[in-house]
Image (tube, rainbow, N blue to C red; front, side, top):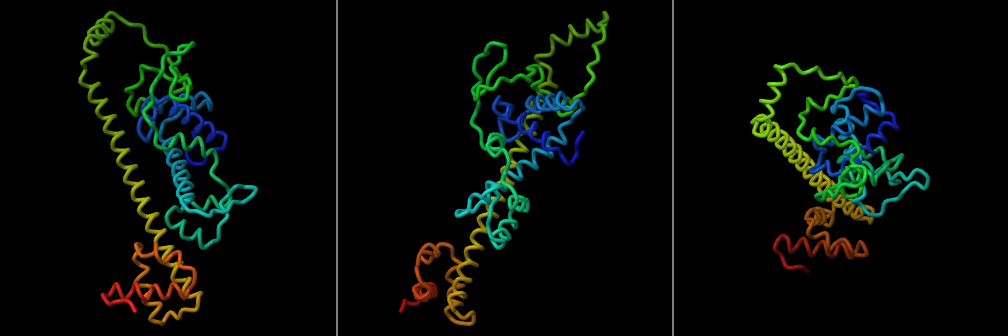
Length: 296
């Protein structure tokens, strides 16, 4: 069972399986549900001929999501250049230095673009509720995109994590005796109201909710960090522009600029000014207004 480095063909197969489960409605929140995970494990077992658990798949899921998040973050910036052959983002090293502070994995896109972007959008982007349609010929239910759920076993919808450890061997069930037959009949009558089923369902729902909240917090923190890095980068760019325009770093004008431009609400008026002279004149007026003096 692969634990770290996956060969490309296995990664592609895994992504295809995830896309099928998402389109079949087995990703109701931000992760696959128990049925979706079990279907993916079955497909991997059939493809590789090996036993699988969800742990290596979970690690690969997070690896793919980090790459997808990083690629989407880089595309929040305008004016990107691309390598004509590889599709990699072609930008100066100074630009990359700021972006790698937010997403360390971003550096991989210096050499190549994100592979299978559209499929990863299906897996990780926000998804609307799925309306499952009527059964088609062949007995398979079809999801939003009309993809048949060939690997769905409707009796496994409430399986726990332990049930997801798939095995190659399928031993034949033992022949029932009179004692086991009686036990099965008696437990079958109580199955609908068994409190353990309710407990397992509650734990599964709580686990999904916990992961959703954790993902939301991580995305919110990443968004804040991205915004802060963008604001800091713009401030440094404005100050460097003044230095390049001949403003002495020991001058009053440079000090005024550092006090005024740190306020992001003032940058909207400063940004479109065409010349250094016009910018310095505006900075002086803005600084005087900030300290409570009428502008000259």
